Image (tube, rainbow, N blue to C red):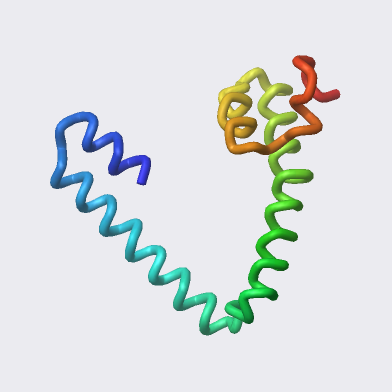
Amino acid sequence: MAFAKKADEEGYPQVARLFRAVATAEGVHAREHFTLLEKVKSTEENLKSSFEKETFVNEVTYPAFLKDAWADGTNRSSGVLPKRGTLRSATQNSTRPR
């Protein structure tokens, strides 16, 4: 959807529409794969699974990405990840994680 937004901003509404169609199709494919893999369960189980995965990403994956970005000097991700409400422990103070 980011590509579609950029195409709209640059005055290419037809290209933006194409990007949105591709994104929608990918969503359909993902749903079909999840269904075939029997990953779609009860709402309660889906909520539990989603919460567990988001917790892992927030506590393990994103902090590792941020640490790597700071280590190599390309801290572009440092402005994106905290905006998503992640890295609370890593961003509570203004110093970099060690």
